[in-house]
Length: 112
Length: 110
Image (cartoon, rainbow over all chains, first blue to last red; front, side, top):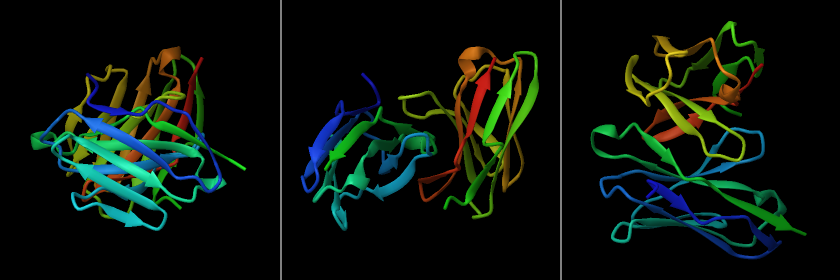
């Protein structure tokens, strides 16, 4: 089983749609969770951290479910500029807390 | 704009060449990373330096040699690479667990 698994893509949605991505992680000792966005041929950029209480940043909402070991990202009112690959990132936890593991990414295409 | 600077942006090298990738950050972050990313794949961790000491080596072949001269600089020395080493090499620093990436070096090994 992969340490971090994401929904397979691509997700192809119209502008204005709401889309949700899920990510599961295998290490119960993991303490830090993030969503990154990566545009084609660019570096990954931090979109948002994910907290136990859930957090929102504009059109983006992230949730963490420790019991089921999954995190989610909800994007409301999708824009063309949201088209990118979304990477779930989880730290290994314990003595390896510096080790950040990437999921394989979910590609989002927002069409006019 | 990223505050992690990588040079060069592009590099083409032969299998007998020796080259170095450079990374610099002035955010005061004490952990620095090298990741390798192939097309349509996620970044794969190579090395982690914590307080200028190598703390993680993900069983990377010895033809890749990292170096951390000081808390702001991270180098990756390359020697006798193979064509399959062609990839985007990303440097990152971290603070409170969050990674901040440089724009990467696109490496082609001929």
